[in-house]
Image (cartoon, rainbow, N blue to C red; front, side, top):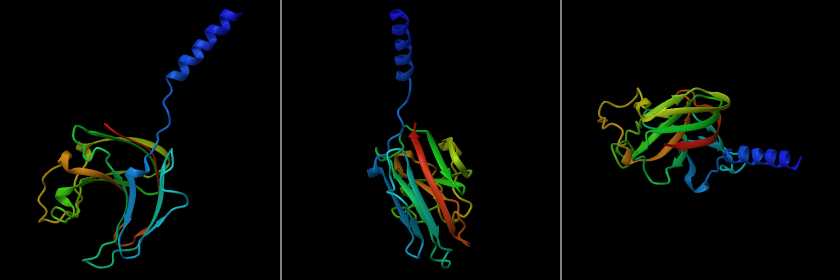
Length: 185
């Protein structure tokens, strides 16, 4: 009898050692930004929890040709770039399709100021969904200005990932999203 209990206890311990801990999010790596035209953040709790990052946005329609509205959840890459990384694994929930943008200095405020960052669009997910995306799946948006020279993805220049609900410039709108897990490989 003791031998059987010992054996079963051993099996239980082996089974537990193979379990992975739930993801933990560092609040220092997460922030958000909105335009100065009236778009707002909706937070029902602190942005970063141990097991998730949760945020909502209310985006106003585009103001005019020179003043676009925008909202974004920003993940600052801890090592400062994507060098030696090729894949993003994200577990998310979003009531709108979710755009992931690579914040690359060549296309931002320190570059050509087009903000036409490489991006990929994930489908909306009302329940948590895990997606694996490779850098090869990212492309610049259709609205990229002709004058913005495409320099490709330069992983050493990508300092952050932007998570953006796919809301239109014309209509704006509301969206809720949660990041349940994020791994850069």
